[in-house]
Structures are given as C-alpha cells and as structure tokens.
Image (cartoon, rainbow, N blue to C red; front, top):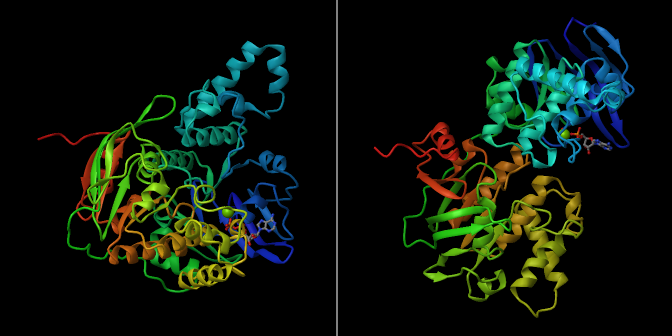
Length: 512
Ligand SMILES: Nc1ncnc2c1ncn2[C@@H]1O[C@H](COP(=O)(O)OP(=O)(O)O)[C@@H](O)[C@H]1O
Ligand SMILES: [Mg+2]
C-alpha cells in the first residue's frame, strides 16, 4: 500500500536476459527529501531509476507517484508525471545555446517561435530566469553548449527538467564528472530544491557525498536493496559493509615515507602553452623523492594533464627542465627516455586510449608495453600469457580469461591491468593521473594499496587526484596548482580541505 510519499517503488524486478538487474527492490522518497542510492558498479542503481523515468518497463512491481499508481511506457509519461532525470551522459545539443536547449521539447514552443520569435524568446527566457531565482541556480542563457564546462552543462540539464515542471529529480552519478567546487555548487542547488519541496534521488558511490547531502540512503548490492537507513543514524563504515557485504577497513593506509635522499625527479620552471596560445603551465617547479606519494590537487584543467605528459615525454614544454637524477629529460621522446635507462611509468587519465588498446586482449595489452621495452625481440606469446596470468592473479583482476578483450572488463579491472602492467616494469618514477576516477570503493582501495606498495619499494609516485579526502589520507605532501602555477605545497596531516580548496581557486595566503 502506498503511504503518501512522493515516489514509491514497490517490489520492482527487472531482468535483462540472464541478469536479474533488480530483484524485488523497494524505494520511497518524500517531498523535501534527498535519498541517495548507493551501490557498487553493476548493483542495479541505474536500472532502478530508469524504470522511474520511463526508459525501462518493470517486469514486476508497482510505481506510485503522489499515491497514484503509474505505468510509465516512455520518458514522456514520466515527465508528464513530474519526474525529471539528469543522465550521466548529457543529452544536450552542442551547437545550440542554453535557453534553446532548455525549452527544446516544450509543447508548442517551436510553433510559437515560428509565429512570433521575439515574444516567444522573451517569454522562455523570463520563465528560465524565474526558475533560476527560485532554485538558486544560474547559467548564461545565450552561451553555446560547446563553450560550457561540464558543470555548466549539468546546470542546463537540471534547468531543462525543472522547466518542464519536474518536482521530482533523479540524478545518476552527477558528481562523477565534477570538480570539488562544482560538486559543492550542485549540492547547494539540490539543497535549494529540497527547500522548495522537491523529491530528489541521487546516485553516487562516493560515501562522503552520501553523508553530506542525503537524508536517507538505500544501499543496493547485486540487484537487491540491502537496506535503507537514515544518515543521522549511520556511518561510512556501516554503509560500506552494507554495500560490499563484508567488513572492510575504510582507512587508506599511509606508510611513513622513505628517509629523503636526493630527489629522483626535479621539475624546474616548466612553462607550456596550448596550441591556441593559452598558457597552461607557468614556471612550475617541485621535487619528487623516492619512497613518497606526492599528490597534485587542482581544479580540472589547471595544467595537470600537460604536466604529466611533459614528464612522460609526450608533450613539449616551452621552457624549463625535467631532471632525473640530475639529467635533463625535457624534449626527449618516451623511447629516448627509456633508452637512457630511466624507468618511468605513466598511467594516464585516459585509460582506454592512451593507456590500453580497448579492443585487444589482456595478454596483448600487457605485451604491448613489454615489447616496447625490448625493441626487436619478437612477441613471445607464451611468456605473455604467463605474465598476464601473474598480473591477473597478483591484483585479483576479475576476468573470464587473460584472452578477454579489455573493453569488456569493468573500470576497476581495466585500471588494475594498466597499473599492473606498468608496475611490472619496475619503474623508479610512477606518474598516475586520476587513477581511481569512476571506480567503486573496493577497486579504489586496491589501487591505493598498489600505490602504497610502490612507495614502500622506493618508487617516486606522483598522484594527480580530485578527491581531497583521498589526497589528504594517501599522500605525503600535496602540491596545489591553479592555472598552471604552483600555489603551495602542503602537509596533508595539518591542512584542511578548505585550505586546499582556497589555494585551488587561486587565492594565495597572505604573505604575513
Ligand atoms: N540494457 C541492458 N541490457 C543488458 N544488461 C543490462 C542492461 N542494463 C543493465 N544491465 C545489467 O544489469 C546489471 C545492473 O546494471 P546497472 O543498473 O547499470 O548498475 P549500476 O548503475 O548500479 O552500476 C549489470 O549487470 C548490467 O550489466
Ligand atoms: Mg549506473
């Protein structure tokens, strides 16, 4: 029986061929409430909300909106019932601007524009401004989507569903693509919507976000709803245990760094411009020691990518130097760097592209790099299999076989293949860019352990990160960059997230 909540899903099941994606799942959300849906990858979260937004039809179970049973046959049905969905991958039209995207699909707006474009445009923009005022969000109405940051595009998506009159909002992993500042802004908007009596479902697998934004959380595991708890009555540890089904340690282990000797890598006055002339690195200098994990914090696009690529020999710098044990590597290709006997590994942001070849097997991907190490030697597939099997078992990579195509693995397993391959080359310097982006908790912790092990072995690890909590727990020092400039180096044990955020935004502490 429905109990008067805004959204009630009762005993919902959904099967895709052999996979029971949702197994007797119930979920309810009240008006003025934010409910988080938490679960590891593949636990059935997207499937569940897709039935609420009319994308999938349940095999069994019922959906009530405001106490009334509904049968959604299409997204239009759900929109008509006041349910708005903000997808993980935005569905905006890049060549159009914000207001055109927002009103797209509004009944009659097209013909109105045809009849009296000026009045119609004015009416639409006024309506958008009113929504912006009411819910505390804002976007430049005339800005083209292709000129927008990810955060701005997301705001347009949200405005679009509010414009259509949604009073229940579903967001599928909205923070996966956002910076800490953008996430904070999104959460402010969600709190405003909550105050305006909206019902909100947010999917995320970041525990601290669940703790921060939601009132209640429903935890899913393997297609089932394991339980629903109030945030005030739970802890990250309890939620993790519900999520993975076993008790886990939630502490990221931080080993004591090795006693400092000479730096392995000295970065001096690196400057670099993009093709369009915009300066992305500006006189950046720092040292990286063996046996430490040096974190790099910064808003996305502050020069992190260029820094990594310059060190790895993939991008030219305008000036500066990259000294490995005193020898300048700047301007050398990756091959030339290796030929000098410098063992350096780079785990790029873009795992399937720069890192691995998506359409090739685990064996071939592992051979790719070891083949590169010894040019001229024919590819030894027997040893390749042995090596691949070693890496798969060492890092508990879950795959049917080492011949499995990399693209078909989960994100966590893909990252373990890449990191495992790089670590097997016994690097002295390991550069990692966002190595846990998009991974669930279990997989993220295995990656932290892999990095800790490298640090213990004396490797100099550079960790470009986005989660400030993780940076503060994992790293020995944190470099903060803003617009390609070094803002400061901080001790994670004594600096707060706010300190780091302040530097990330480009505010230098007063020179007192
Ligand atoms: N359209 C689909 N066809 C076949 N299987 C699917 C489809 N959508 C999801 N699944 C499967 O259902 C399970 C749950 O997926 P999903 O709801 O996307 O999980 P989550 O969002 O929690 O990561 C997974 O095993 C996934 O492979
Ligand atoms: Mg999903």
